[in-house]
Length: 313
Image 1: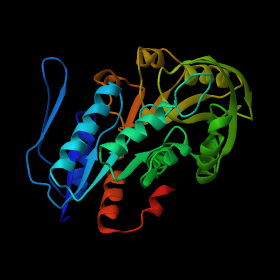
Image 2 (image 1 turned 45 degrees about the vertical axis):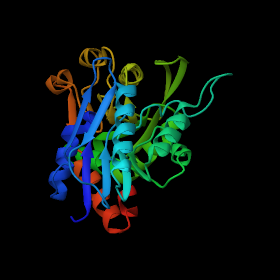
Image 3 (image 1 turned 30 degrees about the vertical axis):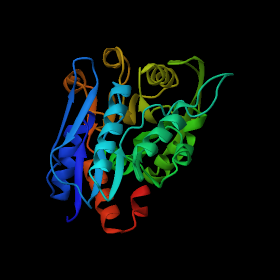
């Protein structure tokens, strides 16, 4: 492809290479390093004048480090006279802070969006935002993609539609679960989740029939794993013969992987929006699917001015 360049922050380097392979373009040359006091330094090692540049960088752990990398790469490209800069953010950190849940609390998802746009980003491509309204936090166009096509293909190839039921972990995820159930032609259920504190959840009830079925919990992300494990335990109590977790973003913070290994979950399906840790790669329960072709196709269509609406479903 002519007149585009792709650069990568350190958080998504393997994914960026796969996207470049899909597009048949080399990865842009840039040096990213730290000064002894921890400051981030970026040097673009090739001309980007009058080119459309795509920067692939998830703002995943370490979140603040990766956000600063994205901002500084963007500033360097802007000052090097790039024609347009699109931030490809497969996983958007701070997305769970999208509203005030108590007095005097910040709306950090909006703050981060403002900073990214101020740095010089003219378009954002992201995937499975925790809340869809975050698109409106950006004052530039946002292409909100979904990993559902990749995840659904895997489920179709592994299970018969008659043996599974799609489960939402809470009321907020019912729209996502309903879309999965419709495309798979399966039943639908929900667990009743209460959250007494951040990163803590209690599963109270199961709504819907899961008896004798393989329950597939669908969610946008798995962080500590606590909600999914409690949901799996509740589903088993209600007669499910097996439980699988299907998520776009595998944050897997703290001891989440060990908790998953010791849980009733038979498999955790995630994508590479966040690079999996070595511990996750070694786990027999965690399956990582690549979204490189989906991102690559979105980048190709944006670059040539073609509609990407068919990628939203």
